[in-house]
Amino acid sequence: MVAREDPDSPVLIETHGAVRVVTLNRPGAFNAVDEGLHRALADLWPALDADAEIRAVVLTGAGDAFSAGGDLGLLDRMVRDAALRADVMREAADIVRGITSLRVPIVTAVNGPAVGLGCSLAAMSDLVVVEEQAYFADPHVPLGLVAADGGALVWPLLMSLLRAKEFILLGERIPAEEALRLGLANRVVPRGTARTTALELATRLAALPPQAVTESKALLNAGVQQAVRALLATGLDGETASFEEPAFQRNLARMLSRTGSA
Image (spheres, rainbow, N blue to C red):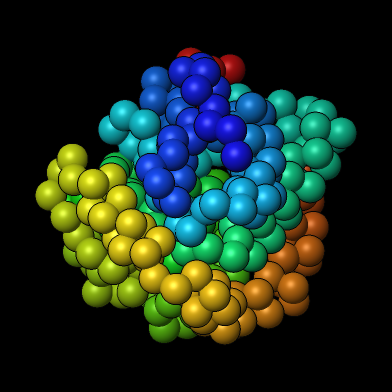
């Protein structure tokens, strides 16, 4: 697989032996997911799966955030453009199916806030290292969107159903230590060290017998795959419908007016 070395690419890929380090690359926007980054994430997982030399992946964000979730400008354009909305939802399905079916382990280095889709990417990976100042949050429902792109699918498999309902429905922040206690993270590490720790873990995974790793991961992910098959299409249909809801449109307009992005 050819590494993407263009510093302006929405996703950067570095080769470290049999490990690929994937970096979400919109640091000036806290790695909020716009059209380019969303499309790159949809294309990423098949490209990684086609890499015969890969044994593990590290996923992280550039700058001070892992990902701030959906870009508000993109959400606004999706309200007004049904074709764009359909394209993004198709890509969302590709992202969820791709990350949860990747044959090799994904170690996510949460180097800052992981919100919305960013939070879901971490939850759908295999090991999660989170820095002490970081937090998770899925604000879909308070914003007025169905929480379809990962959190509602996998959080009930990682923590109790009651706690998953609390954090999905209320959209509250989950600090790093609480995430560790709940089962959303494997390790909490000091600021600035998540990438290094994740790379160390990925390197250890890459050195293990590959058939044993990939087939064991497939067994461990059976419940995740079942949830994706059973629920993803219905969830994305609901999220698509959310864009027509006045409550979501009002909330989005209010957020855009605060940021000056309207």
